Image 1 (spheres, rainbow over the protein chains, first blue to last red):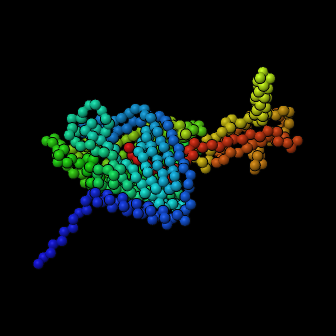
Image 2: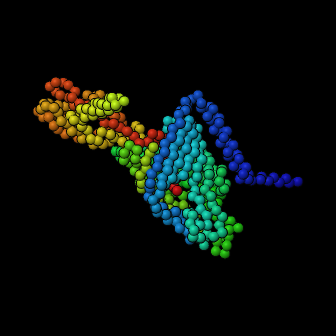
Image 3: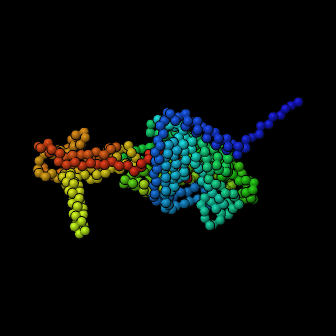
Length: 286
Length: 130
């Protein structure tokens, strides 16, 4: 008699629960074991910035949708630190978004954090930006919400380079996928200027990227066939320069280039795989 | 009441006058522009070109030096007014003083303050594309 064993794949909700549970356990035990080794700074540190930036961005183009955006914008940044927790929010400049983190291991040259943040731009049948004009080619697609990913970041400083490797799972979003992010930054201090050169790559699991650029059966039409996006990578280069104009004023300018791997354009809703951003502005630091 | 008001005004004027005298005293002899240097973060070396304008009370021999290290920047002989440009670069505020070579006195002191914009230096610099 032949016994046939089948292993049921873990469903995504269970995967989410396991991820969150593991992270919570890891955070708890890690902070407990390190409590004696590291004196935590009880002081609440905060810093807010308010400014105006001119941003010119061209996103990876969705078919029929506007992907170019050029306008002055308001910038509101917040940086809050308490004990091992930190919250960084950026808006207006090109590495926008928010990061919530907890520093698990703090060593001189390296560290490990638990991090939570978004990695992917949301869009809907109107494209990336909310506009009144309907995009015919995207009509009928479901809304792609921003991910809210949770995972670990490993930081390593070596000379004037800082490298970070992040492995995150979209625990609170809709994609049920994971992402690996690798990034190296070189800082050049040119008198009072700070210049940052940044090179990085992302590797998206099929589930993660398919949520954004795949076409489900209920979205398929005669002109938009059902499509599944496989594992995908992306690469980018960024350059940013900061200069202190006065005691509370900073001038910033930067440029960024980004490209997905070539097969992304096989998706029926993707027209181009590359993106770029240029920005310039001033901010007041409180 | 009238007397009180006059007294208050007098006190205020005296204070203002004293403050001005106190401020103007050293700046008349030793004036540094700019007197502040701003860096992005604490601990960063702040660079600026500081122009010292010196107007001594009498003709004589003078030197400009760092207050703490007593390192001489430059000396001038048989003059009372001169200008010196310093390529300032420091992580902290530094005071400079004008001394008279004959009297061995410190005639004036001025400080180049180093400030920084960000109170919190990012422990981590996370980058996002969009």
